Image (cartoon, rainbow, N blue to C red; front, side):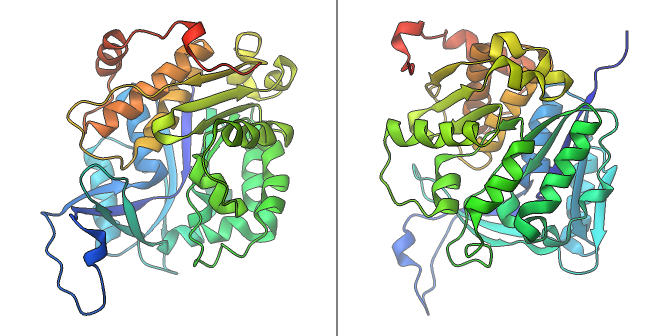
Length: 353
């Protein structure tokens, strides 16, 4: 029996420096604000989504860009300590290693101060896709070089993946309205890139910030935006709406069969479906940092393992909950979480007609 094919994680990588903050309003010019003890970790698509996939026993390959500076050496040694191969990790001389300062008050979502750094000079042509089952690319809004010519470098990377028989996947990040990428035509970027995307797992905030949508949250908004991604060519959309859960919608089985060997294998069961997966309860809440990446990892793991769509949605929610508890998402941890919170009967889920 041949070895299972690896999942390639390409895209954003950074060092996260996190501390707790009791009052965001206390941050003002000239102020000295007391905060809690700092912690640091390696973050971004590679470390968060890739790390969770590795914890679940999936063979991975990583591709990102760091610099030969202290933060870069820390990133590389941390990846090595986690047993994550740095096979396609690039060293850029054009900028420093990316970092984020993560601010989070108890019971609130986190805020970031972010330096994109070497991520903006990532070379997608150096990504190995030959033996991949899935090629996942994360955080284009923090990798300005990948957005040139309406995202043409992303499109070319994903087309290479398709040519090798891989299923393609993309995750987004919030677009800072004051950043250099905020003025780009994101509708045109989506129009160019999405036809090459098989699986998309953005958050509602990711999409509304990119498209300049100020409409308040509603179920209808989530479903409309997810449907628009399907209409633009995506095969599977898992749109996270935070405490409201994740909405999963899929294109026809025929479209899924064109989405690489991994997606084609589940096309009949996954195709032409819509469901809402509620979040799973979180005990001993630690942080929301990386929860969206963990959700994506749970989804991709389920796809890689050939699970049903409903199981994939539950596994994604469980993976996110485990991350928010500050725990490691091993297979045993997932099994315990899913056993503790049995599937909601279909009639209790919000299902679209």
